[in-house]
Image (tube, rainbow, N blue to C red; front, side, top):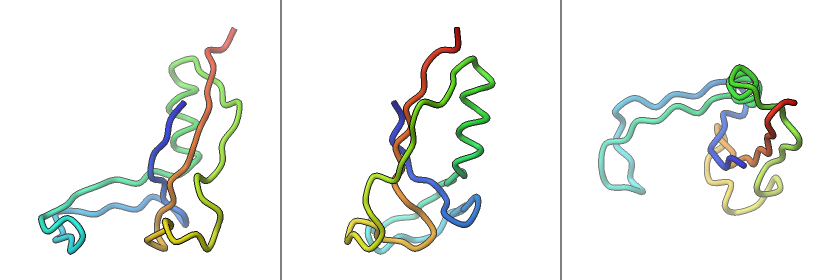
Length: 77
């Protein structure tokens, strides 16, 4: 199982930007759903299930560019 931040409209990158929330410089890469699925399939895992961690409109969806996402993979037989 993987829980990670995912780009909503596409890959979203933050490069050395000051974060008010963290009070320091911040860099991150938010991959798309398809990027995660391809990467895991390339090492022999298949997707069983995936979904956003929170429903749209939930206060923990803090940024419009990203969503926390859950993936469940299993080893291909």
